[in-house]
Image (cartoon, rainbow, N blue to C red):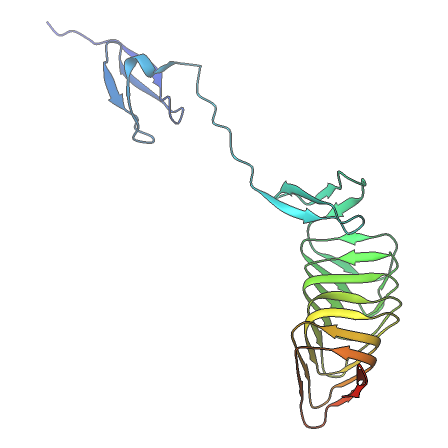
Length: 230
């Protein structure tokens, strides 16, 4: 006489997968994740273990007040917990007039007809082709590709001015390094690292500071380093 073993659904305590086992089973291996467990540790059907996912976060600096806070990596926007300013986390292109401050973790492009009218814009990378009334901060790099004017100044990692492009500022600029293939006109230019002026480049300022200066044949530098003409 053949006996039929009664089976029941059990839940893996590790991954929550359901599988059928003998009603009198002592131990088994989950066919989903390979976890070994005994009958006393198996959950009853309908009581699956919920595994909470860990939310990865990153740091974000507010362009308005400078406060640092953590946001989820996949978040597209947030608000500063200190001053309440709205913060954008993706990429942005300005093709017309933009009023208000910006804080981006990605890339900001100010187009040829674009004008940033806020008091400060901060983005990891900035492409400047138009105008800006406010201060520009680019921790990675600021690349100038057009005939650009800034009422204030700029700061960041690397300053790149492409051949044929120009940037004129109303206040000093502060960068870690510089590659001037076009023209830079400003009250003062400060570089904590190397500065290179290309064969078609020109830098005109009342004062410049740098760690190392390279001027290629044809390049022009009209500035003062303290009392020394460079």
